[in-house]
Image (cartoon, rainbow, N blue to C red; front, side):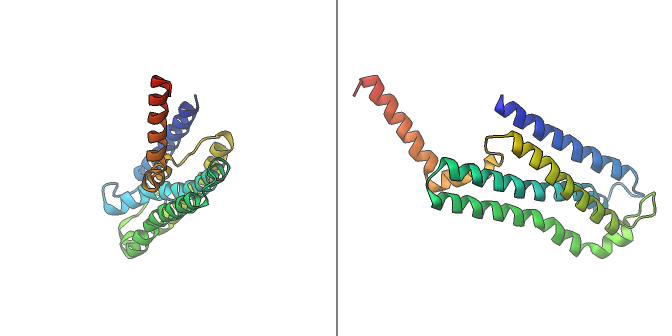
Length: 176
């Protein structure tokens, strides 16, 4: 049940950002261009950045309660920070293509591409905060499973647990 709730939120989020991006692309003069791609991804970028941040706080709190190893919590915090930095790369790309966007992307409403991308990014950021706060308040499980899984594998935690589980199975089988 817990995974189905997580998957429902994930699917709803994907449908929302794809729908918003697609609707906005429809109003561009040239919907098939690099500028259109950046405008399409602007909402998603803002939403993903804020969601990673909120989910990271949620998951670190869970980790502190479940794992006594502070080193592991610090590693997870570092990986989450790196993930947030990667999400910020969208802003770098947008900054690099600023002139291109202002000249190439025009909308039906007469907005410049930069203003539209900034508006979508900020709207996505606010949406991501609201969406992730709701999801994290309803969830008692880890929400950034990929990042935490990578940390656990790299730290050897999962390997130790698997070995311990296999050892317990063998002990029970032979009644040692």
